[in-house]
Image (cartoon, rainbow, N blue to C red; front, side):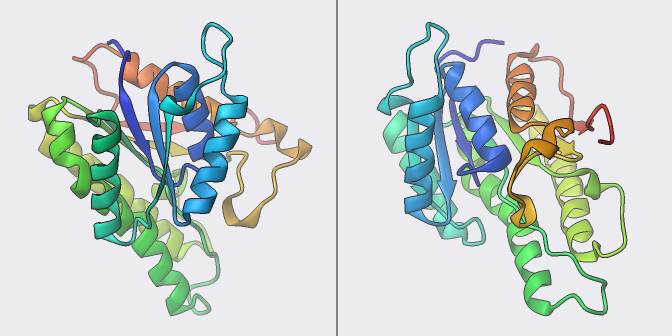
Length: 245
């Protein structure tokens, strides 16, 4: 399947997994829009991409490859404006990657209402908002919708009640959406990573993270999905580090 001239939208693309995906896709020659809650963060990420991303011929990516957008996935109107901006800039939208997410961990009797609501609104409702805002473009362009879930979407753990609930929800939502959209030619996949080197939960990546999945690995996985035969759909992918440390 050709990826030439594909346009991609990545939510939460300013750092971590989202930034790693964006870098891999820009280096493959795709046009990529990245969003963050603050436009300044999205613009900073764009600047980093333009400094770091190397195209196949060794040249740096140019301004025409990357679009920085401010959007809070908790706000459907923000996501609508983001999609409209992408189409106005690039003329279309082919691939949407719902990556924005957060985690707050505490025993259920200590988990605050604010943290519960923030996770459900971002991790689950935000995934719906992103697809709802983009689905007609995806149907028009025989597109691809990918959600970044987690192994926490199938494996529960103590202190993870809110996070588990949101990620179990993402997996169920995306799999049901896959059934709804497949006859339009729209592919839908949820990726469920284990430990990834990222800034998740206020972690600062360091040398001790070398055993983990790298954001670039998720980026390569998405490139492989986009190049796959149109008749083949890996609808749910669990991915773990080879080792535990």
